[in-house]
Length: 279
Image (cartoon, rainbow, N blue to C red; front, side, top):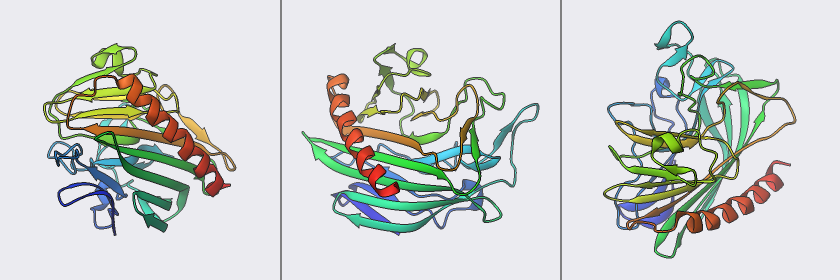
């Protein structure tokens, strides 16, 4: 099941179902995207991390189940391959021009549902740029669940887990409202993150105030992080909202703050629509 949200030919924003992926990848729907001219800005199953799937909602520890894929970090044991991979299954889907709505079941290795997700993704052209706006609402399916990360499990600095965007860039300039470089960006609660590579530029924004996880060594990847210094608990009846909007351009984006302002407006609009669906 493939949903093309924007573009034509090789230049496109598309979501793949992920149903045919190996179990060790924690199969899940994922997004691929290019610039308007067709330069890739996502990467799927790169040699360094086969379980990185373009842009996807990936969480490494949901009550011990990995929805990230690959190895799991365990305190005093390091990163080890475990038989703990979950799967995200699309139960319902509605697609129209530039828009996708899905209800997704998060199942552990035994088929038990841990989470129910309502996801909205929209893609459009804006002033010669492409924009992707992603809002997800997570609810505990029956019992309370908690989210962890390698950092909460003992690996300092590795607080990844959330809507993860893996780029094909080996290196890039990264910066936020808090300053230039990874040191200023990793852990920042800036509402936006800017990335400039040799082939494309991205401005990412989130309304969640979650700290940015930023990687810029070996590859460039980023996400607003769900679990940083301690595990995050989600009890029945509660909703955890995650969001990420990304502006994609072939040219340098000169004013990330102004670009992010528009992205944040669209995320707030999407959050209102998502609440109407979940309620």
